[in-house]
Amino acid sequence: MKILSIECSATPCSVSLAENGKILASAFTNEGLTHSQTLMPMVEDVLKRANTTVKEIEGFAVAAGPGSFTGVRIGISAIKGLSAANKTPCAAVSTLYAMANLQTENSIVCPVMDARCNQVYNALFDIENGQITRLCEDRAILCEDLAKEIEKIVQKHNKSVIIMGDGAKLFFPYVESFGGTKLAEKGKLFQDAEGVAKAAEEMFKKGETVSPNELLPVYLRLPQAERELKLKKKIETKKE
Image 1 (tube, rainbow, N blue to C red):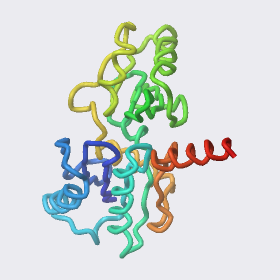
Image 2: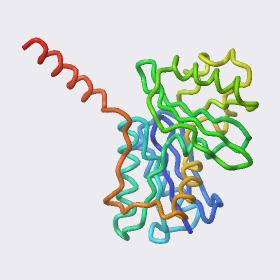
Image 3: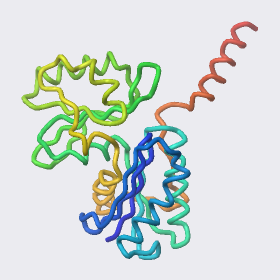
């Protein structure tokens, strides 16, 4: 089964084409260019290098969130457009779970994405002999609170805790002094469509897919503009 996967939930942007668990072609950039400029040319390049057409794709996958509101929307819109013509099934993959799929070492994986306001989007995963066990749901959490959790995990588990994601370098100073914590190696530090592809293959096998029309982003909180509007209305109501 050929699956085309997209990951543009944060600054990095990547595309992967996999067949039966094997990556046929992939592309990755982290140059700060807008995803609206880079994504579709990357899709075309990956398909061309794999000598594959969109019609031959049997499944599409995307990192559906959490992440940048703009980035997630661009990824969702791209997959909807690519899959709509043939009504090809789609997999909405958790950005954080996709990151965990990039790691192979027996460890506790701690993906973090910069959510601003001293918060990160995060989930925790236990990897044992290639099997991934989710330890908590995707969430937005204060860096200080997550650091306290990591400290307890380090004391309890005889495993390394791997910090990864676009928020890794921001968060790592909070836990650097704890024995057993480390940054993911360079090639596995950031979000990547290859992780989306691996997670998506599992979802397709389980039938956990949706139609192009049903594909939706997953947000853990409202966009900043909506939060500010909600706060403004709350303040105005109190004044009345």
